[in-house]
Length: 229
Image 1: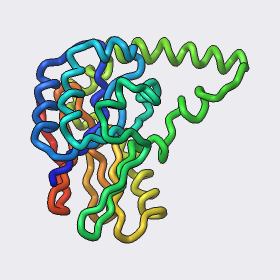
Image 2 (image 1 turned 180 degrees about the horizontal axis):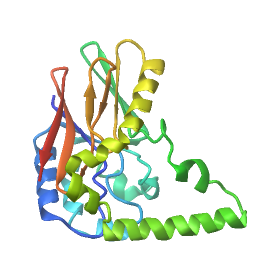
Image 3 (image 1 turned 135 degrees about the vertical axis):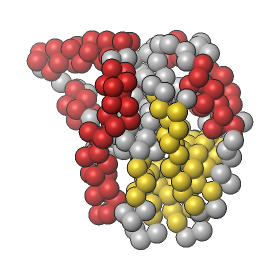
Image 4 (image 1 turned 90 degrees about the vertical axis):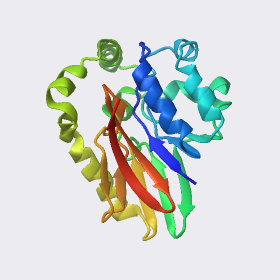
């Protein structure tokens, strides 16, 4: 069985045919597909996402053994019956075993919570906190509508994401401290693709701005694929 793991596609307001074709290809050429969080951006209304051309990807996923793992941008899909019909399972963490290895797949925000998760989502009526939430919402909407991240990515290419290597370090530290001998941790979240067999850790990277990384596992062999679309 060939398992493909990817995350952080951050599907947004605009349809991208090249990105769609790439995702369709890696999904179609797999047996099990694990969406490791942040498939879309919850700044985009769910109804808009479901009525867009991206919905065809969900129809392809429905034909596979597809698992949807929540990321920090997936809050609005929880308990949504429209989304549920396309996936075998929707969860915060998924495990499967091949030979003597148990692969643990989770987005990574449970290990490294975002500022939003640790502070801004508190149920607090404090006026300063309420103002912070409004500023955050405006900032996020501008960020994802304008795709401002394209600028450093265009200049520095995938090297831009090396600034997030510290997040991988923290996730590897978690793996070293918490995992059993036969377990292997696979995360997304940091957008920095990495395969570290020694520390039993992999990050499946991201698929956006023409860059594409994902993990493939087949016959207990794990590969990190780096590509362009």
